[in-house]
Length: 319
Image 1 (spheres, helix red, strand yellow):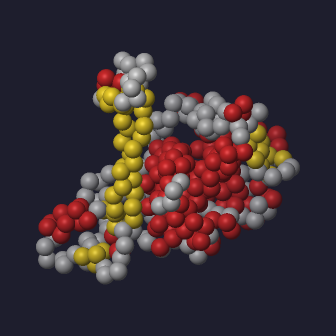
Image 2 (image 1 turned 90 degrees about the vertical axis):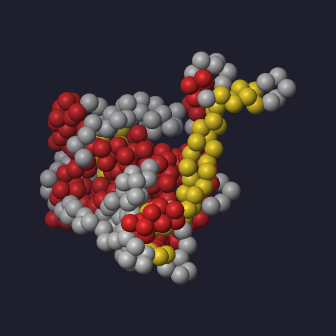
Image 3 (image 1 turned 90 degrees about the horizontal axis):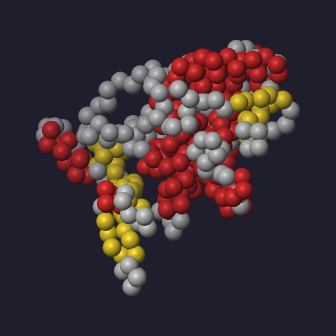
């Protein structure tokens, strides 16, 4: 984040050989690594893919810098099976599994290693990126996105929080934040919690909440805040320092890697929804309202803001 001296990672990690973006937890892991290491390039590829680039550009002497280490990411693969009376597993295809009532599914995670283009000498230059949004453009996008999602936001006293009972994000008035970036950082963090409501992703059913499940939701929210902060140049909490980012990165390699992978995948899912909205597309999440209703939802939020005296159009720094 620029405000804390960290690089802004505005672009999704992708493979320049396949043209595909890394998704889910792998997107989180590579973005965290770019933040930690200060990589300005969002291109990542395997050693085998690098060999293909070398063959395409034989005169460039492309090679990984001495002493550089790759990043381990995971390829998830679902396996389906039934358990026989003797305890033996009988594996079936995904298509066969649809017609079997007692079928079970496990997700296996296969590791592979990728390198960032910044770690590679003489790698072909990246095409010019699109210019970054201005602060006003960013604020307008985030305001429209949250309103179009159907998540109600109310302003008043107290700390930022999501009220699961009323399905409402509650925030202090914008003038209580030291910058518009701080306001939208808080809004997005509580919005993420709202996506876990039973009417959306159903991550946190009220009756099933435990201390462990609440802590896991906080982990998801922290990951989402780091990524959204990097993408939209929003100030992140002091806890999201380089050391804290490194802490999460280390957990990907630890004994609880599967849990961290799951949390990261769920955080990335909401970032994908935001990206689709930003591109003018209909987000593919089943719960996200259809685009023909967005104008009405934005107007509803504007009316809520008028009632509580929240004025989004006024630059927060000028208040």
